[in-house]
Length: 285
Image (cartoon, rainbow, N blue to C red; front, side, top):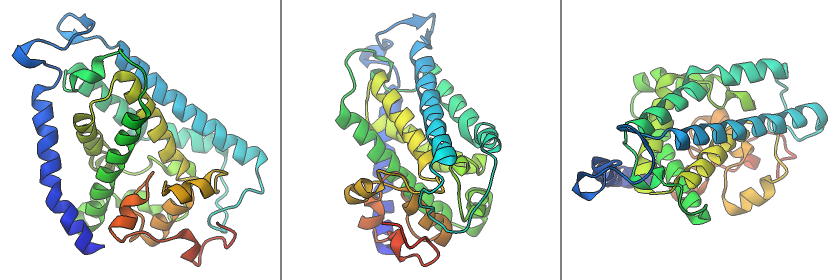
């Protein structure tokens, strides 16, 4: 695990350099001309930005409605950790939406990134549809970069960990509403930096970015669920992140640094199967 991460960190400057090379052009084509598309004076049209934020909002609402259905009617769903953590669902919703390091910070980041013409030209284009392989590439690169930043938060220095990621780790038995409940520093380090680099490396169109943003952000909520999901057996076969996988990290702190993908943990030797954690429900598959 440690040796694999050292190799990965040696490659990190190359990844960052590629992203910076891309951002130097930003939303400006060769010759200094602005990217094609509708503009509001010297500013890009906020239509795509608004649609993207609304799409992510819908993804969050759907994730919360799903969690409510599980909370209300699936009372026999398999708990990942047998110790109950009772809560009022209305309180959980209020906690989730008011996190400064959650929705508010993401909206501010997306607005600045879009309106200041920092995104590659492709993101301002409404041409074409959703190419699944581009969305998959965004998810994979985002999760790899999150893996790196997450590992660094734990390993770089105790002081940095205390200031950034430790507030999120007070939840050793997480619930879905804990997904963005941490610190502003944690969101900046582990979410915004990877999002920025991913957008520079993968030149998607606006529809693909919306699809990625909505599905990825909803997935982050679902992996913090206190119960297992019906699709978990399939996800486990595919190496995709499950709630049980993420509970391993919250319980042990030293395994499963990936979020929606477990490939990186398996490659770099930091994966631990939930079934091997004795504090978890033995009924987990």
